Length: 138
Image (tube, rainbow, N blue to C red; front, side):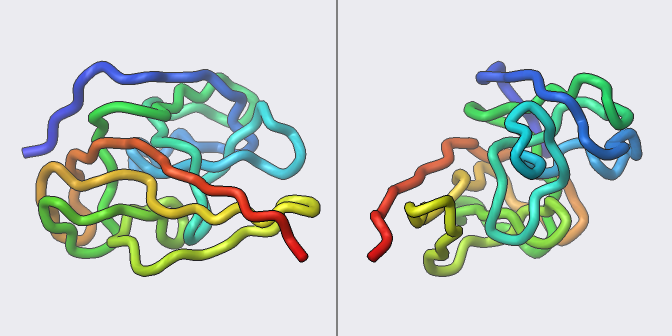
């Protein structure tokens, strides 16, 4: 059974409608160059987990740390390291990846660790603790 405990939440503006029930507990990421808007995370992205269901232009509450519920996009086992999969779903993290950010490459390692197990399409609990490293590009 999934549960959550108080963590660190921040508020952004939704750049798209995220009011469908399916969007709650999905990974979200910053939308374009506007650091105050969020959209569903693409594969290997994400800054946190959506806590509410805002329409475009409304406030989106996003957990960035703590024990949170997330939507599994694949089978998740206790202890698995978690990354974002397509359309904001959670998936087991495999290897590392890089995202270009200006003249710096940011290597996003993992978004957290599963505390409960889940089948694909189910909600599970994870310790959300994104870990990033920066490597200067050549």
